[in-house]
Image: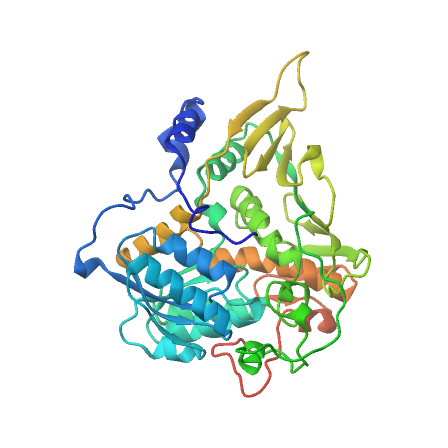
Length: 449
């Protein structure tokens, strides 16, 4: 998603909140029973309530997350880590502006983990650097807020769960819609039975705002960048601007393309509504169909999942396009009695057996959910309860997204054994469930197959 800023991290306006709560019984308190209601952001904390967070990855997303953390007055940030001097400087500037004191800085993430004065870390690196800092932070006794998806592979996610459970840590994945009020309302509506039996769920993202990524030759590493540290466990390759900041998303060494970048957000809400059952089989089709783009991951893709009780379809397109019902991105739940369409602007319900002239039911959006998502994590750091997007939830969501790419890259329909977390009867596809780390990097708790 587009990086947040301190401005976009504002909570729901009082006007929108009043309008939201006027919309009837669906907005009653019971509807949000699954949401954690946190205390306000403006209270002055006691010294004993301070939460000290170190940031690993101070790019656009990391600074957006940190600005949201700073909305809670008890948060301090003693250290900023990034491999790029420019990102370090911007992160340090944000800390000093927000808290009046310059932080320590480093390019080595283990410097953050070695500190004894930190309660938690914020991991907002490229995807291939999510697992190692998270696992090692758990080993060092720190809680973690890690951006989505959990990593570049399913087996890395399993290692992260093992580390968190072994060391009794609180870990939240940064899929903020899990803390959104109108998303919770839509989930409750789906689960209420008012749509009848839901047998088809669709999510789509057609993006015309993504920056162009034309093919470029390899070049010199920018001044102030530790490229070897940036690569870390990923394969050794010459520096190429296309594979670096932001555009790393479109290369298999570092990420999973729009399937895991935007797909995780929407699939998260789909699975929230439909329950914890895993998929049985997945097939995918797509490719790089845009002109002169350097992407390795598909810029156009459709993945079809067979669950025990329903079908789930994901589709994305990089470039101009309109999704279902004239929505550039969104989710639909279709049952025997109607269809619910959901976006960040709200949701509406259309009956499949409409009487003449009947208008769809419309429900407004509830603003940026990121502050509530971060607040939920901070409250759980104190209470030691599990956050709303804990690692088990985040791993389930990330696994479904990754399986779409496993099917795409293998070129075959795959069948999934969720108990063993293996592709059934297809060793070549099953290799894509994990990832090989470049020496000397090794991931603790990585499952043996």
